Structure formats: structure tokens, C-alpha cells
Length: 484
Image 1 (cartoon, one colour):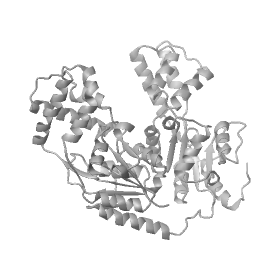
Image 2 (tube, rainbow, N blue to C red):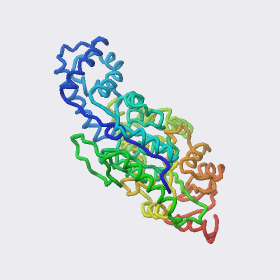
Image 3 (cartoon, rainbow, N blue to C red):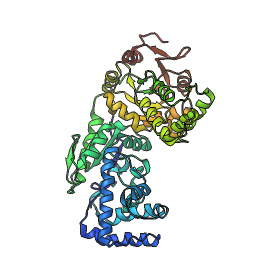
Image 4 (cartoon, rainbow, N blue to C red):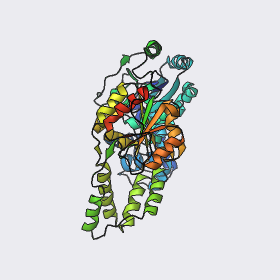
């Protein structure tokens, strides 16, 4: 594999930045004017307002470090910055995005690194895709600054935590960026200034290269968690690293499986990588405790509800609430407890024997590894399970029905995986357990392997243990194992 896409961090990487209390107190006048124009008069001096804003931003920052959630500006202003102030919440909500944009464009002194345009042009001439992943709370600041610097046209995709809802170092945002670029994570490079956000996140997502560029700014955080492939001071040094990587890829000998026409293995997630024991028992006990009887969800209603959730037409919270309301739960406190129990059951996953070791071996043999999952859960939840299992970084592609709006056996969801992995259908294998999903893979020309399968499944191969995949991968070289 080689590098096909380069992603940049924004603040501290594309641009340097800094601030002083004096600058921020001066610029706070602009915030106060915007509040007053919206009918919000706090009766505070600029210094007093600055202190409230700073304390609120710091409180939100500490929470976001723990959760990696990026809340909308409306929530940040209402729940953190002006939470203790007597303001009209609807009016504050209406101007929250504008207020956050003002803060991110006026509370910092920003300047593009002067060598950046030349570096971007050189990378473009290398034939590589260029993208950007940034932690930012407003939706407009990054685009505005890139436009001011005259480099906006180089970046596609631009992935913002404010739009995706998760912050670096969550590997989910790195996977999302790679999917939008239509490139496997193993063929992506990332450059950023912060180890604990940029390097760690790229590492967890399985990016091929993670480079740190020094930036003289004290984040007030412990900056550790991963080791970068290189540390540089000037962006031009990155070009040398990229060119060396590209040259090494051209000159490298074929991998172990170079004679194997199969280049990628794509997995269903639930009941293939993991399973849940006694799923539903906690919910049944909870219902019994509060005097509600447990009953079977009618298949047609459950399937209709799952379709909505799995295609992202309702969010996970709405999905949980619909389940609980089916059992007659309407009280807010009981709904909250019920959702907690559903979370506990969803997160109670156990991995099939041999999963971590087998996936690692397949990765070492040079196979691309992907997931196609029908799910109501956000990608970051499943990635946290895989990280706990010791195989979070092996994935080159994660295709989620919730993010794409289609579910198996729709051919589009298989084709999305093939496109990102850069393989044709006859170069891939799908590992699943349901007839419909295996049939969907076969319909687009992907060979199939059945594991933990239901009765009557038709597949090209059948395995009883997950580690048997290592034998199946050899099968495509030798054709010595009997087809199913």
C-alpha cells in the first residue's frame, strides 16, 4: 500500500495562532454588541463578560476532552457560557452560531504558515488527495480562514467536529474523513501539531502516516498518548517524508499475498466479530420491577423501527424511546432508566474466540479489512468496543448504514465499501451470517464466507471457528480447500 490522501489539521498546523487577555477583552465588545442587538442586555463590563465567557469555554473544553462530543454552539452558550445568566434562551440560541464564529475569528491571532500554499501545490502535483480534519465549534471559521489564505480550493473533504459531532482524537472522525475521500485509512497520512488529538487519533484509525509539526502554543493539556512517525518544524519537511514514502512503496517487494486475487475481507459486525449473551434479560427484569409485562415486539413493527434507526432517519435516543414506549413506559424518569439499561445491554459485547489474533494476522499478510454494519449506533461506539478488544486500528473502511442511509442487502452499501477499499468485487470476500446479507454480497459479485450462520445459508465457504479465515485466505491461492 501507499499514500493516496493527505489530511491536515487546521489550527497549529495550516495556521499558527495565539492570544492575550488584552486582545480578548478588547474583542469582547463585539460579543456584547451582538448580544444587545438580539435583545440580551447583561449589564456587564467587557472585562466581566470576558471572564464569564472564558470560564464557560474552559468548562465546556474540559467536558469535551472527556466525552469527545462536540456540542452545537446553541448548547455551549446556553449550558456552559451563559448558563448562570438571566437571558432569553430562544434569543441566545438564535445567535449562538454567530457568537461562536466571532469568538473563533476574533479571540485568536491567526496566521497561515507562509510555506503552506507551495506545499499544497506540490502534494497536488504528486497526485494525492488533500483533506482537512479540525476540532472547531463553529461551522464557518475554518472555511473563512482558508478563503482568506487563498487555499480553500485545495481541500476536499473538509471535516469539522462541529458538523460530525465528535472531536479528535476519536478515530471515528478520521474514519469518516477517509470514507469521504474514498480512500482506505491505511493509505492516508495525517499531519497535526497535537499528539493527544492528532497523532493519537490518526493512530487509532489506522492511518499509514502520522506526522507532528511543532507549534509554540500551550494548550494546558498533557500532550501524549502516541509516537509520531516524524516531528518537523517547517511544512516543507513534510514533502520530503511524503516523497520518501511514495518512493518506498514503488520500490517495495510484493507482499505475502501478491499472487492472491483476493485483496480485501469485509465483515458484518454483530454475530460475526462479537455477540451478546442473554440480550433482553436486563430489560425484562426492569419491566418486571416497574410492573410492566415483557412481550415480544411484533416483527413487522420492530423491522419498521429498525429501518428508521439503521438508515439514520431517527437518532439512537429516539430509537430507544420508541422501544420503551412500546412497553408502556412514558414517565421521564423511567424512560431515562430504561435508556440506561438498553445502553448497558448494547455495550455488553463479547468477542468470538480468535477474533483479535486472526484480524491481526490478516492485516500482517497485507489484506485490506473492512466492516459493513447495519446499526442504529454511532460508529464511535463500535470503535470503542473494537479498541477494547485490541483490534480498533486494523480497519481500512467502516461502512455504517446509519451514516450512509442504506442497509444490507442494498447493493449500494457493498459498493461503497469496494470503492473506498479500491478493489473490484472479485477481489473481495464478505463474511456474514444472514442469508439476506450474504445474498446481497453475492449479487454484486463478492465471494462469501458464512460464520456463525443461520440455517439454510448459502455461501461459497463455511467456517466453524473465526481463525479458520486464515485457511480460507490460503484457499484462494491453492484452491485446496473444498468449497461450501
